[in-house]
Image (tube, rainbow, N blue to C red):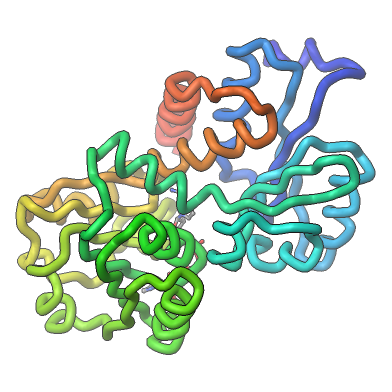
Length: 296
Ligand code: NAP
C-alpha cells in the first residue's frame, strides 16, 4: 500500500484492539481518511487476548499511540484501565474509542452518536418524540438506546432474548438518562401490539450477519407499514434477510454501514482534531465491502 512507504519517525499511530480484529473495516476507512488529507497518521489492528487487555492499555501509553478503537470483547472490560470517561461512554457503560493525552487515557463511545448521525444524514429521521423498538440488549443496543434516550425519544421498548438483560438495560437507561425505556417480551403478539405506535425499529443482534446471512430474527413483518423506519446494525451483508423482509412489507430501511461510518468519523476527529473527510471514508467502506463480498 502506498502510505506504508511514507511511515517515518514522525508518523502518529492509531489502532484497534479486539479479538478477533481481522474482520474489521476500520483500517481501510481510517487509513483512506489520513491519506486523503495528507496526515502523517496510520491505523493498525492489534489482536488482544482478554488476559492481555491491561498490558495492551499500558502499551497504548508506553508506545505513545494517539489512541485506539475498542471492539468485542473489550468494550466494557476496558473501563477500569482508563483515567476518565466521556458522558456517552459512562451512560453506555462501554468504550469504543480511547484517546491518549499525555499519560492519560480517556474513554469515549462514538457508536451511539454515530447511529444518530446516520439516522439524520442517511434517513432524515429525528428521534425526538418518537417511539422506538430495539431488538437485543447487548453492547450495540445499549449504546443506541442510550443515545436515542438522550436525543429525546419518547419511549424505547427493548425486546431481548434474555428477558433479564432487556429489563436491566431498560432500568439503566431510565436511571442514567431519565429516558423512558421499558422491556417487553420478544414474542410475535407482544411485538405486533407495540408496532402501530412505533416509528423506528432497531435490529441490534448479530442474527443474519456474515457468515450466516440466511438467518433472520423472529419478527412479525406483517405489522410493518410505510411509516416505519427499520434499521439493522449489521453492515455485512448490506441487505440482511431482516431488512429485505422489512422492505418487502413496505417499511423504509437502513443498514449499519452509516453507523460504522459515523462512529469512525467521530473517532477520527477525536484523534486528529481535524474535520473528517466523510465521503472518502464512505467510499473506502463501500470498496472494502465490495472486496470482501467478491472474495467470499
Ligand atoms: P453483543 O454485545 O454480543 O450483544 C448481542 C445481543 O444480541 C445480545 O442481546 C444477545 O442476546 C442477542 N442475540 C444474540 N444471538 C441472538 C439470537 N439468536 N436471537 C436473539 N438474540 C440474540 O453484540 P453487540 O456488540 O451488541 O453487536 C450486535 C450487532 O450489532 C452485531 O451484528 C454487530 O456487528 C452490530 N454492530 C454494528 C455496529 C455498526 O457500527 N454498524 C456497531 C456495533 C455493533 P443475549 O443477551 O441473550 O446473549
